[in-house]
Length: 463
Image (cartoon, rainbow, N blue to C red; front, side, top):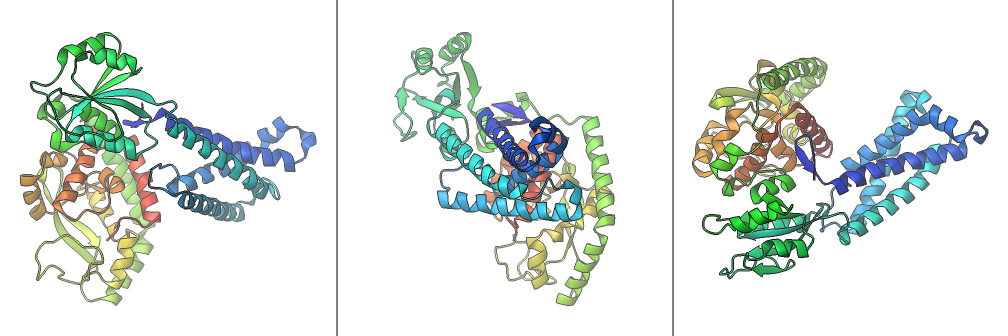
């Protein structure tokens, strides 16, 4: 896999996305050449109009992304995919119509967009059918052998089976000879580590994934060393799981893995850069969004009694307690009778205006003041309440490590996992939080913000 923004990306999927972008460009370019004056020459037309063609291609590909058409899972039906593709084309048409109304000079020419839609749908559908065939036939997949037993091996197999676009093909799972348990119904299981390298070479395996829950007294060191010397890549199971899921399997991690693994670098320069970017953006957004925030405050005051802003203590960097600010979306004194509780779906304490601003994430806007003050960053683990932190630290492994960075208005866990309201959800979100802390960078922050915009626009995950 290729590492981009400290995340691993399937080269096959990257080629698919880039290839589709080129095909969308080709569809618009072909329509332009057919409609515009052919006497000028094809190269001249492309030279003059390529920025306008790129605009259409970029808007179209963004629309495909925002409709989840770059996520490939087994549960998706053909009807659902076709529906989302039509919606993406429709949204592209609307956005371009607005852009052309505001900037008429960006219009390529009459009827070009409509003609290009025909080519575009043909190219995109054909390309996706071809990619589906590539996935089904496991073409351009990295062939692997897995040495594993227990939950880690099952979790890895589950991820690969559910996410069709992962370019890994696990040919066999090798387990200890004395083990009597089922690992997979789809992948052949072999017993005994003798001749492991011969097995790998017979399967043309490029890598051996070591996914043993218990390594002490079980790890076939001699066989794995022999494979390494013979040019076969050896991948630690926990690292492989991080690579394909974007999270850390904290239940299975030893402290030594965290200590010796790559990442967790937080230089003074990166911290200063993140703080400077946060300060500048928070200042600009507080100024630009002040009219909207004033209207929201007025709506809250009219809708229900109580203060406009909701203030609450949260745990920040290094365990420091700070006050977080939000627009009040629940009735006043919502926890007076219940004490500290997580919000439920369709929570009766939420007001009419509160339901709207929570759905659109507008209730989070006052946290820009927290970013301005330096209590929070734009991107980081979400700050939790001291009451829940004390409970979770006792029950969730490595929970205290999430306080090594400033909390964020949004975060990797928020864009990768739905709203959490239980200890199980807290554990799952910690897996993503630790992945972010391990791999954090300004580029990764941009990725998180980009995902956040998508989630907000589609009104996902709010309660």
